[in-house]
Image (cartoon, rainbow, N blue to C red):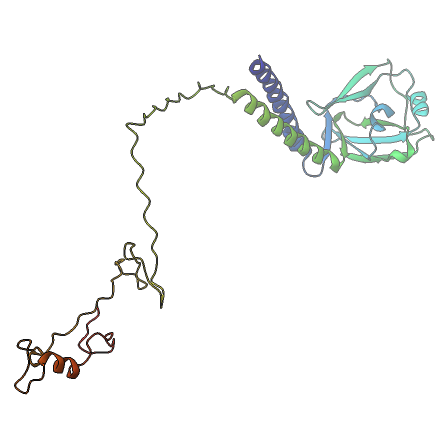
Length: 305
């Protein structure tokens, strides 16, 4: 349901954005950077043409009117108060400009009245008037509104009537509208093309097999700590000693004393008295050094491992 609503909203945004973008681009191209709008009509008539305040004073800016006769003709144009202009023209046949059409940039006209119009240039009620052979241009300022403009061809027909209005803000507004429409168009397309997220099933988790105590590997026995041999102390011969220079540990050695053999002349031949009657054992005992004293540790004959 949410996906359907999202797509409907996306379609509406895309359509609105497309329309707004097209309108903005079209207005910007027609108005130009100056923001000038021109509305044209080709009446091809010799009757007077009236442009009332509903058209002249509809905008805040100045309105420029240009009348072009057929080749060889001349134009007359005058500006007056709406009531004065209606009184002069009266019920004679004339063409009235009622509105403008933006789609084709044209002026809408309607024919009304009967009979021939009087001589318009002879009246003294005109605020501003101009007459020339060929095209005639008159600028209507909004400070004198409301006003009515009367245009009449002399010696020919009115070929083209152009109304121009300039407003630079129109071009800026057209560009902004085009950008907003483009944004809405992109947003709508994104909503339309967004794919529904796929819901994947839960990942299968395999059970961990139980390991019995018989199959479990035995943990290695902890190694005995290495005890360095301290200076001046004894070490346990049953424990390994780590070398301080990074070599493999060795077992401490017990101090062993090796005595040198007794010289052969010190050994008596036999126990008994000598020729002089002295006991050899006693003499040896008296002359021989006492071997029961502790051995000198500095004796070079002693070897300590």
